[in-house]
Length: 230
Length: 223
Image 1: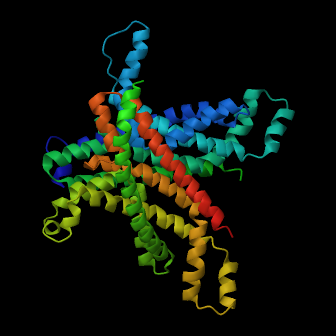
Image 2: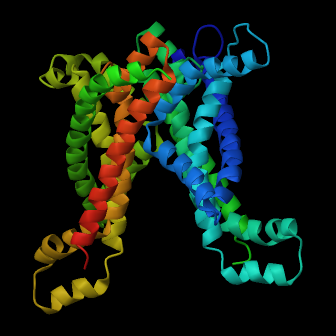
Image 3: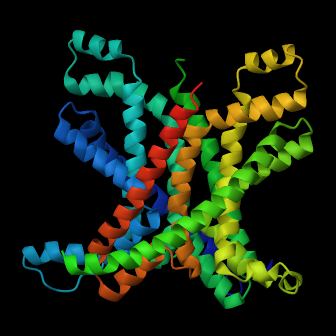
């Protein structure tokens, strides 16, 4: 237990901050994922074949390629791509992007593909009459979506979104390969310097279990809140 | 785009695909076996056995695969008694450590898939067997298990694809699988996009094959 002491003698505070980092990356990635889903869900539902294709390529490629490969692409290719864009605008210095941003972006794109599928499924399973009724009431396009479709969609999407959250949370362990100090990286460092990998990796496993357990409890609360009417 | 690099790296990546497939098939085979055992344990009425099976699937589904591999590969070597036992012959190899981790992980997911399949079998099928005077043991082996396997095919197909992506983590324990070789080529040439396109296409092709195979099996065993 000495190993987990807070302060200079133990790894307690380091692991605590690492856990916060994991949570921060997961939430950022989830939000980035939602913005991707907001772009690609309409594309997938669109009647135009070409737009449909773009949406399908995104979800198929991202869900068919290992997460680690996507992370390597961003890790090695991220700053190159940014520098290329910057050079068009006449900025030629070396730009290094921070590991947090690359990491959450990579995980965000992955999580976005899963969220897109969830939202698409949820919107498709809303009764058609709801769309027609919204139109007949003469609501504006925005009000139709915001007041009628969105609340029903959320109710249907939350159980599956909780799966996406779990996947995202676990995927964040992979960005430890880029050197971002989250739970996995911190355990790796601690295991290396104390030569006690079994203890630290098991402790990391417990931390992840705790995170999934607590988030499941919170999501269940959200779920009951959104299905009040049913 | 550096097409020469793409063409040159293709054979290397294809070679590495063999290791990926080997890891995938061996761990799926062991995982299916583990999954079946734990699914049956989950249906047991004894609360201790039931809870044990539940904890197994909860722990392995609630923690990242990376942690599981690291515990087995880096962690288990620390136990002195294990290092002097015969098990060490297996556990010192990163290949077998990866397979153990993958098999345990996919076993947990498979047990959940099979359990829900067992629980959603229409009672009429079992009753029909009973009314024909078949013993409950034979009903289980000859009726429940085949029907459950058929019912869980779509979900199991997803699990195979997830596992295919999971095998990429073998590269973190020094195995040169498809992702490992791709990373090596990226870090020596600094051309991530080209390598990503080639390696990604191989993965997509494999996913496509698995998807079609499952659909074929679903059609073949339709009832």
